[in-house]
Amino acid sequence: MSIKEIQEEIIDEFEMFDDWMQRYEYIIENGKSLQLIDDSKKSEDNLIKGCQSKVWLNADYKNDKIEFTADSDAILTKGIIALLLRVYSNQSPKNILDSKLFFIDKIGLKDHLSPTRANGLVSMVKQLKLYALAFQTKNN
Image (cartoon, rainbow, N blue to C red; front, side, top):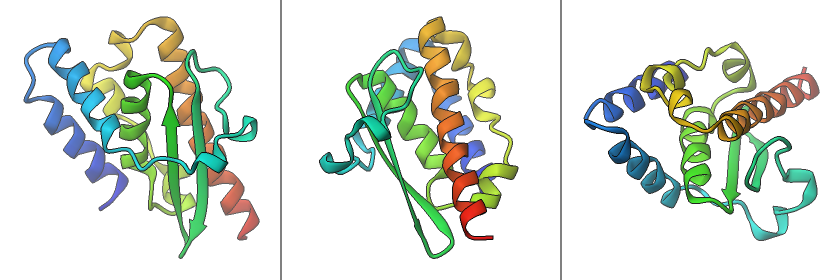
């Protein structure tokens, strides 16, 4: 499935909810299905800088695609990173770098986060794209 198709699927899912309390609950539920980072990878090196809560992110490059794993010490943040990994995991570095992340605005997520959580969201996206850039550079 393409990055665009996955984002459209997420938007469709969020349209089922009438209010933001239901959407928050759905985000938290998504976090429960997150492919967790191995405990040995929960290091300072894998900690995303700029997040209010702790978020660890790891990337492995297999078969020309990046497989991300992550975890967070906050349930809402875990749900947010789960959504981002759903979009970007198992995609090629080029597809990640060329993509426009539109689902965040379409579902209104940024508008319903505190400023510090919104900054954390930007930091998560930036780190995902940095991994893609590193793997693309390394393999060219």
